[in-house]
Amino acid sequence: MDRRLLPGMMLLALVVGCAGPNKLADKSQDKLAEGDMWRAWKLATQALDKAPANVRARAAADAAASSIASDWRLRIQALAAVDSLDAAEQVMQFVGFRTNAARYVTVQVTEPWAQTEHSLRLGAARFHYLRGSEDLKTKRPKRAHGHFLEAERFFPGYRDAGRLAERAYTRAISQVAVMPLRTASGRLGLGREVAEAWRQELGEHLTPPDVRYTRILPGENVEQEIRVTDVGRLSRAASIELAHKAGAERVVWGTIGETKSRQSIETFSEIVVRRMVVKNPDGTSTTRWVEVPIQVIARTRTVDVDLDYEILSTAGGGTLARRHDVRSMRARVLWTAMTPVGAPDTYALYSDAAKAADPERCKRLETRWKAVVGDGATLSQVLEAKRTSGRESSSTAMARVLAGAAVVLLEGLPSTEELALAALTSGWTTVRQDLVSLDVIDDVEIEAPAAVSNDE
Image 1 (cartoon, helix red, strand yellow):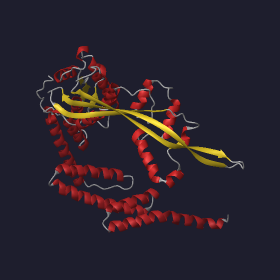
Image 2 (tube, helix red, strand yellow):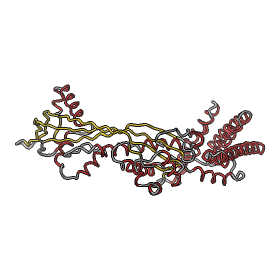
Image 3 (cartoon, helix red, strand yellow):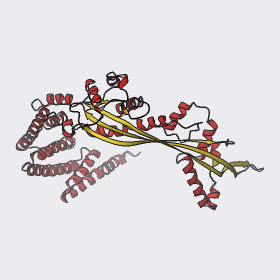
Image 4 (cartoon, helix red, strand yellow):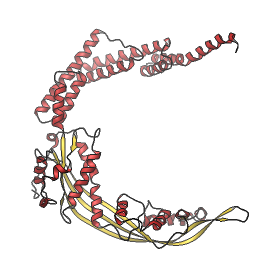
């Protein structure tokens, strides 16, 4: 390379390198002139990200930051006259802006303004400290904890807000005991099994950040307080007493009501097709669709179980949340005498050619298939299940039914009790919703008086 060209090339590279940041800086100045200071700030910082030493970009950033700071000060002063707390919140946001902007420019703060910010932040910290102290006295530790944290946020180190926040947090923790549900009819141990399943699921899915104060008591803490003869018969009052002894502030107590079961049998008897690939003498292949008769019998059992539960305070015995629900579970088992020839995935309800020739018939075929077999099962899945039926135990098959498996072939349907257990077990999701809603609320804020009940 000719050395005489190097200076010119270096100058060209410098010009090209500056064009991007300079153009952004110019756009920033234009936006600032139009009154769009935040867009101006964004363009200027983009320019500085590309070229930190670019003088024009830094000047644009200084101008945008100065405009933003001036606007923020005016808004804070206007707010301070009507709502000092909102003004203090704006101060915190302004401080955050200055902190983040420091990598680009320094936003200057005068001594009088620093004193204004100090006074507003100190006033906000004092307000939250006093509110937190009052909440502690009136048995509202959760709200108190929030106030003390706010006091610390506005003015770190304000009095003993940090220590009181820790005290309030300790008092705010709500240990929840899930008691064995009462059983109105059927096996008494069903309520204990449901409670065990709820505890496990809630313990795994009720964690920060979804909740701050709620904890699920381990099963052993609860069960050790219960006599065997009380399982399935625990009254509301007994549940509250036992939960209190176990160290719980809240208790989940409920009743399993009537169980209804219904069965149906549906049959799918139609002509389906099987794909066959035939080799021709010239070495090419031809695809043919062969019609095959099939009959699939589906037996369905649907179980509905009434469920009532309450979340109670162990301190006052009042109701924090109450819910009535009907939990449902359906199991479908299939049977067919047809044994597939070749791979199950070579079978289909109809071919592409048949769909083109008679789309209405194919649509009726699909509708009938879904009505009998279900939305989630294909013909190839049914035939694959037929091929593998008998290779798994009934308990394994039952587990797959409850897990929502598309196709399971069994000699018999899961029992009503098995489906009832599965339906009730899934009720933990609504309990979780209620506990999440109650997490930040102190009992005294929502506790309804304990109702007079024969359950006592």
